[in-house]
Length: 173
Image (cartoon, rainbow, N blue to C red; front, top):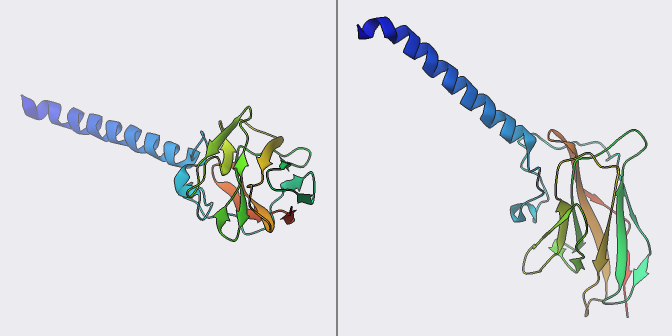
């Protein structure tokens, strides 16, 4: 009697396996809808399991000033061209490969602790389409050198640009 149910059980197991595999692949393709993890701080590469774009990023990074005093604020804006949008981002202010300063909390923004710092990165809180995001950054109290805002932007889970750099910001007393 068990032999008559054997083909049905095999079919059922294959269907369960296919659904589990499909669910896992969808989760991998979706990436980190809740923002970049601390593990992405070093290379700023999202773990989306596809290679990054090699073309120039279509997204603009603007800072509201060219110089700032230690402990001064700068506003960094990431924006898409008309008709375009992005779902994810990760911003750091860097001296070399080290994230410095700290970002202020903001709606739709999750702060990330990179290296030994607190709130040294800012990332998306959800994967809703965005056309513009502005974050406030505070320069460290003892810093006196150039800082480069470095941004990774994801149009979607499979299309992203890594470590785009803004114009240098001079931090000086």
